[in-house]
Amino acid sequence: MDTTTNGHTNNNDTTLIQLVTFKIADEEFGVDILRVQEIIRMMPITKVPKAPFFVEGVINLRGKVIPIIDMRRRFGMATNAHDGQTRITVMDLQGQVVGFVVDAVREVLRIKESTVEAPPQVVAGIGSDYLKGVGKLDDRLLILLDLDKLLSEAEMGALSGVDDAAMERAG
Image (tube, one colour):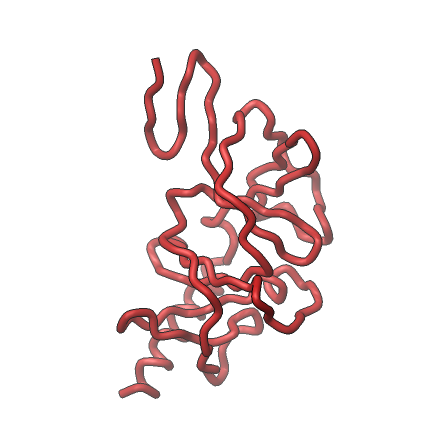
């Protein structure tokens, strides 16, 4: 008997996690599908003065101002020019709608929870603070992000300030 709760499918004690996967540089990441509101093509991003280093700016998405985080900057990776594969994944981050610039969105994937291991201390130069685990797939590894720990409280506060500054400029 299959039952689905909170994006996880239970089938005879085998729990499946449903993820949206995306690439940043040469690494593949995954986040819980229930946290992803939508995936959009790149659009013009308005710079916001005094924004945190990892904030590229804001966009106007159907009348709502959304801060945009460059995931390469957030992870301390070299930035690159956006191309036809670059996407903005719009997600819920601690109750705030935020867009994340990723190099490419790969797929929606279901993996067995049993294939996920605790994260090592450092993966691809990224500290383990905001990693949920590493999923072992047949031909690759998938780094699972813990969105609730992606930004510190101070960074979340600064992100709220970006919204306010953008609204003041627009008004």
